[in-house]
Image (cartoon, rainbow, N blue to C red; front, side, top):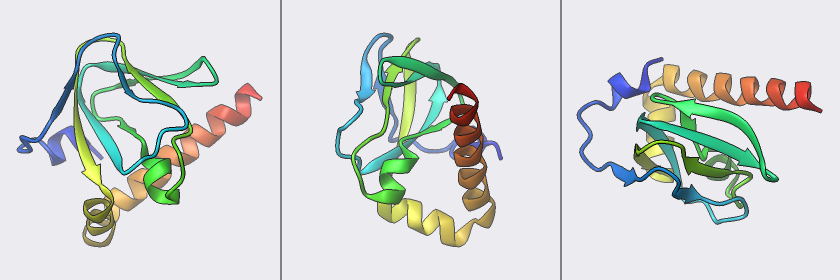
Length: 118
């Protein structure tokens, strides 16, 4: 699923310059984000686990579990993120089953990657 294409008309984007933190591990999470442009690093316990590119989602675990963030996201290049609050997330899950499937696929891929590291 191409999330950049799905949300291409959204104007409420959050710009994060290279080197700046979008959110930190342990922060409260009320939003997940779609990376609309740029490259960002997903860091857990000071270790880069993934380099995210346009179309990637970040922060989904905190919004699903309603628990603190499990990772830090740092803009590697200038980035633009689309914030998605919990209510909109729930609406998208209900109205677009392919969105829900995409979220599950991302979670499964990240779990497999973490398992391989361990």
